[in-house]
Length: 120
Image (cartoon, rainbow, N blue to C red):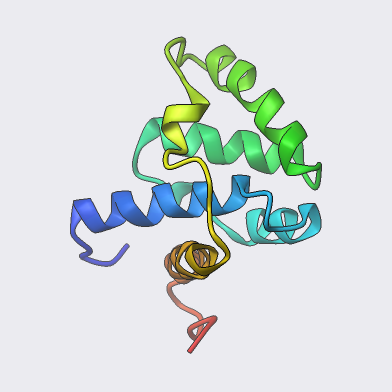
């Protein structure tokens, strides 16, 4: 793990999860990113559980993912989980999706610290 600031790590984790839940990416893309990401890069227990559940659901449609995710996270020990506020702001513009994708790429780099950078 690099010496990144806790706040910036939180932003990376949150943005990556918003990206993975976005209707603007395809299920296959989500599945591939989840396969490459190490759950241990998520320092926050709730965000790690959300990621693990997204990964376990696989390449399903994002709308279906958002339907199933709250109950799955609640069953993992987070009874007050509210997906709508967790993903706020809920709507992601096409411009913002690039920023969220960049966060996912940065977490991918943290997942594989001994490999060359996965992006420029």
